[in-house]
Image (cartoon, rainbow, N blue to C red; front, side, top):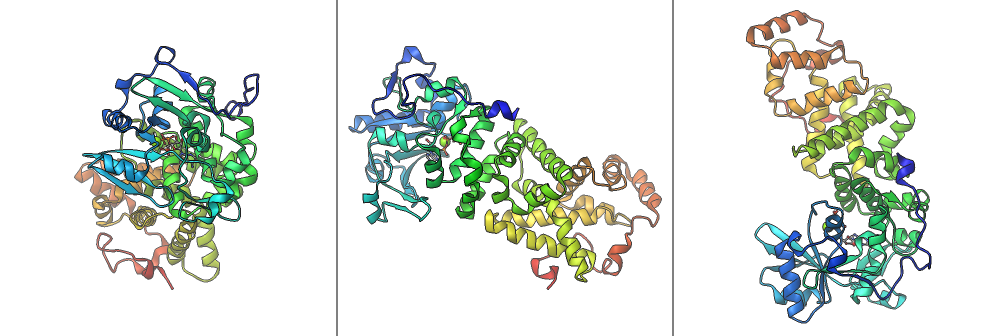
Length: 462
Ligand code: ATP
Ligand code: MG
């Protein structure tokens, strides 16, 4: 499968595959797009800007996806008008962003993103840090150098993302042979791949994301520098990586994405502790993560909600035991050791990927649940069932079992318990006898009822 993904494709004879100043113009008879397929708000913006004398097109993912018969996620507009000029045309427009200034035009809950044509950076631009700046390794820190349509096409990432559709003339402008690559199902960077990754290492993740989402191969020269440059992801601000990682894993193709990330050595800079577990306990770690991602993909396809917390809980779980064991060798009792390990692991992970508090708390609760699900006697089982995290905790238990963790049939017990009536439940609890009261958890239990108990990071241990 991976072989197919990374197949290469011979560029058309005549060279200059991805650099042209005059576009190939594909008129309405030669392509399948129709104006009516695009958001009428986006089309309205383009018409309005054109009437005001600017150039304006639909661009990027919405053109690419429609050509492939996929419903687009959002509609982006590119224009020769500056953000201020765009704002002046629309009452419902706001300028956003610093690294990359854009205009959001609001139509109720629908937002259309309008970007001004941008150019590549030249050294001359470097003096003006408000417009453009690079760091020592060539990474673009600010990208507000405006340019022509041609320049805008060249600074986009992949050829298939550099197609411009004019809904008025219904023509497509193709500066980078993007239509050719769509036909041949290839992800190909525009320009020199190594340089384009150095400018923005996140493009490495985007290559993987689009390959998985579209079921495309990554062209040979585009894939070639990735392994060598993958560690550049460590320089990306953790908040941006959080957004990208969500896109990678909530796209409905997370299982395949994970395989590709590992293969291209992009997983390690994102999840260093998990990558280490993948080396130390490959089968277990791989099964647990793949299974979690496959479940996520299924839920996305069924239109069910997915929580990033569950995803991160699974991605990090394999790294926990080694850490907890280490703390135990330092004399920390088992449960505080587990909590200490959880706390440290999340803190460490947040240095790479800024997981917001609203997700880190539920991650801890899902993990916490794993310690509590075995302790079922008395009223505990019923209290656990009422816990708002029960479902996630139970699903997580089944996930662990599917990866081969030995739990003495605990998952099945909970499945049966949920289906049982009151008297059957009483029997099930009675049958447990004393065997569920793990010796390890000893004295500290009976003080607070599980539903009231709320752990904070501080009470973990000092
Ligand atoms: P989707 O919205 O389906 O995720 P998309 O291609 O629309 O895919 P966006 O992130 O919405 O992706 O970006 C819109 C367009 O902006 C892209 O198609 C591409 O042309 C350009 N672009 C986005 N990110 C980059 C980048 N890091 N480097 C160069 N061009 C980019
Ligand atoms: Mg988009």
